[in-house]
Image (tube, rainbow, N blue to C red; front, top):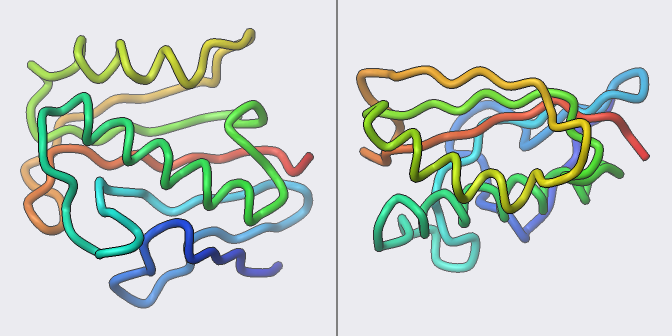
Length: 126
């Protein structure tokens, strides 16, 4: 088991790794819409925030020897399921390949720093 880290995604804000690689599988921690350079929450609508989350996730997966095309499963956490269609439209642009990853989407009461979205992933190492 080893940790994967990158400065191209936000540094962890607690006692966890950006990702753990074990037995050919990457377990990527949830990413929120933080700019990795400034550490600030990305401004704008849910579409811009979703893009930033997936870009952060892609950076972590790359550091772990994987990529969005190797994602097996994601979990999307939203503070409001009314945003689902808008998030799904952005998500579909990044995960357009077949087969699409397995996925769960859940509404949660709150997320770190008051953001509206967080996504985690499990992926195969390339």
